[in-house]
Image 1 (cartoon, one colour):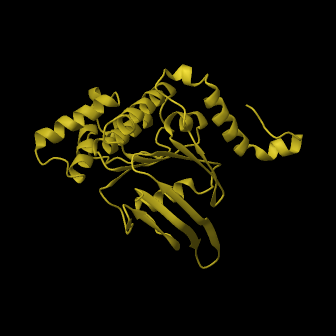
Image 2 (cartoon, rainbow, N blue to C red):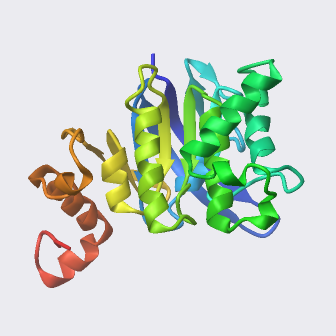
Image 3 (cartoon, rainbow, N blue to C red):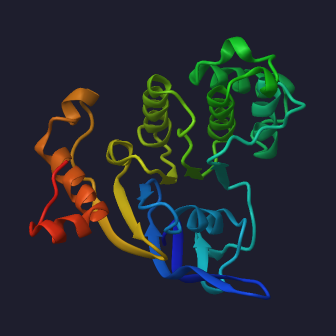
Length: 266
């Protein structure tokens, strides 16, 4: 049984004047503990697809299953990090994280909840800002709190929609490493669906990369090489360059056709 199964899913948006087909017969299966990155041009349906898995929207055709059960709405077995930070403005950083822990029913004891909230604020480098409110923090810091809240919930499935887009480069790398450690190297590995526009980020994080074209999945690429070495060494491996060039060609296939070559290496 697959952890997540997307079966022949279509989504049609319509109003009184027009219709827009956002997804067209998309199918995707994700194993327990698998880290899948979804990448593709803007507007191709990446965020729409992840919202369906989250139960925030519903397909007009097809079914989505988690552990063999049809998704009928949001659930505590899924944690979501949105593209734009979504915090409660009236709660401090620590209380925002604590809220997620309570929703996941991890602990009943307030001390345990507080300790876990403090632990994950430390993991994202914001332990000194525990008592600050969102309006007192930068956008990138707010997003790191949202990430801490979701990771602290310890859900079976993580859905992450461009979660590091508002974070500065140094902290983005740190959060990538944190995500790998918490989602891929722990004993109880999580299934992760991670939307990104960043090719290097996708290769570093993913077990499998799903490349979308408008409305559909165009290609799936297995990322099978070892990543148990320093990041700068990973970037120099032939396996890394092979996957990167393949993704670049998927983005720029039309350029390759116009110049008469089969590949565009950037």
